[in-house]
Each structure stands twice: as C-alpha cells, then as structure tokens.
Length: 85
Image (cartoon, rainbow, N blue to C red; front, side, top):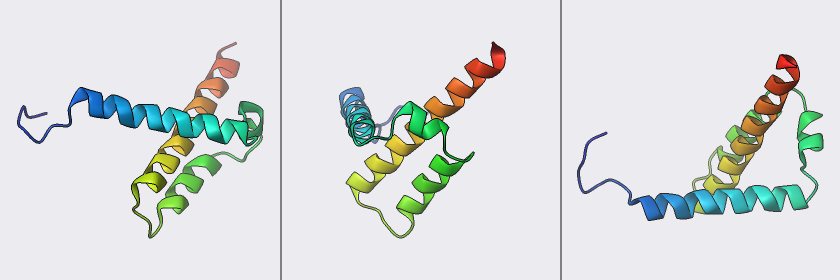
C-alpha cells in the first residue's frame, strides 16, 4: 500500500467497521441469528450480498452487504469448528 494522502485515516475505517457490526447486530435482532444462517444453503449469504448490490451503490446498501458478508464469514468459521472437532 502506498503511503500517500489518499489513504483513509484509521478512525474513518473504525467508524465504517462499527457501522457494519451495528448492521449485523440489527440483522440478528430481526431473527437472522447464527442458527438461522447455518440453516441456509451454502453460499446463500454471499449471493444475497452480491444481489443486494446489483444496480445499487448507496453507502447504506454497501454497509448492509458488508454485514451479510460478515455473517457468511461467521458461518464459515462455525462450520470449520464443527469440522475440526
């Protein structure tokens, strides 16, 4: 990564990450829990994130798609734990 003025300050990155986590928590509160996500077909959350962005580009929609990807990463990690046990 180059060290120029176009880099995003760390506090801005932390703000974005906090928004993604908050969106994921909102999704969980709506019932999209680990149990719910684990019951979805493989790659479903990835497809939802991709489809969510089809033709869209608002900042909030990017946050929502990133939260879906976070949910998918969590699902993959849980599956790996089960596999390794």
